[in-house]
Image: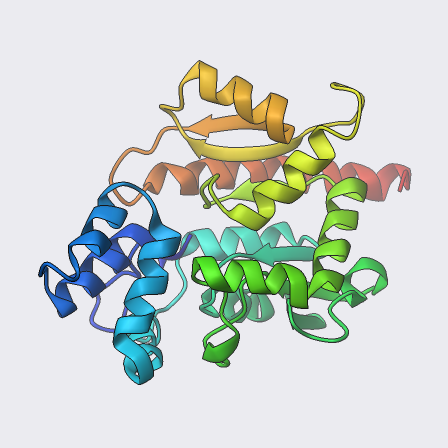
Length: 268
């Protein structure tokens, strides 16, 4: 998602998580005592690598995060606008930047509340009649509460169990459409797997996971069986996945047509 935003210099884009860790690791340099960090990144153990890098940066960690994700002054891309126009009542964001919510408020001009996983009233999105953006990992305005490392994921599940109960309830009562994200988030995976294995296979409708073409058939079947995720694909076109914009434009057109029908037949 954030790769579709652009910095004020007209060329900088927010890095993907692995790229961010690689650049961050280069700042401390590869030495015998840091070799394991580079190995963790290359091996895909990104949560531990992030935890160790955070410990190395110590009090400079927040400044580093903001230099990468805030200081470039990113503006939303067309993809952010399209998702805002879809006008879902609840949007769960795994990002800790505020690129999407700013565009959403501008586009919809309706009541919109941003809730963080640690807010005491975060469960409001389940019954409230407003629009909500729920920050699953926190946001950079409160860096101490970010969920970004192995330790932080583990702590959050215990300290903020109310949020995870509400998230679990939403997954059971709503159909989720995952867009612009990977399939490796530990918390989301845990909730999806708990639900998938607690019911008879095929007895509940799937959630949908939009990703670029190239996922193997075996992985797609595993995602459906283990997490009840039905994979939808698009053609990436280029490294910045401009094909995702076209796919979402097609979805927006179909949603608009269906909403027009709802107005005609009042079948809501």
